[in-house]
Image (cartoon, rainbow, N blue to C red):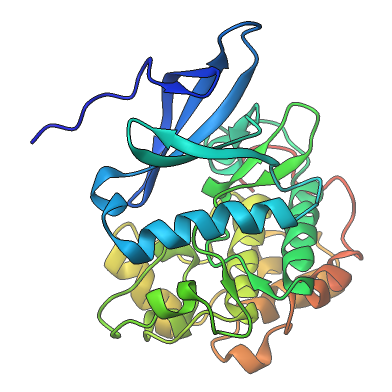
Length: 286
């Protein structure tokens, strides 16, 4: 059965106009206010997830969690409701492209600043007892003013490991969640995400932002998973020799196979990055 289009559907006083993106759980639309045209983003639960009690509850939990978070790199949510019978909530519409697109198009940008901002928002989440669980450049939008916004909090879990999200991520080792490029070895083994899983993802982000490519360049997903699981990553200084020793050490340690050998929180990772020169890479692969 075909799913009705949500284009021109209403969400309160807003009208959905453009599909901005879609994942396995939800779709995100640009919506405009009927009176003044002010734009917001509206996240809508996919129809096949609407009937799933766990996903439905997790979607509501995401909204409630975002209501409680306050950080300049986290979008602000506005209201919860429905669009044509599907759960939805509105939030800030963030202008700009993702850091993944910015790097791919070799645009000029302040790489070191972007990396610090990613580490700062991850450190804030870790301080709140939360694991983002999907840190990647595809989930980081670079605004025209240089501010990085980390999006997609649908996979966040509590450090305590007691909430619904944790139970959803108790999977068999053959069921791997996440983007292969950023997955920590323990997640590939089917273990639960931790703060150090986020740190590993930050290490991968650092490689891409500063050098233009990830630590492992396998073209196929299976090859990237295998490399993350067992291969020894290169030192970041092999690609960015001008990087300070302290920052290079933090990035190299973030990619350790053993979670105990990584910085234990994003805050620890961030502290080491402060030795990194401010400009960083400003465009084009190194």
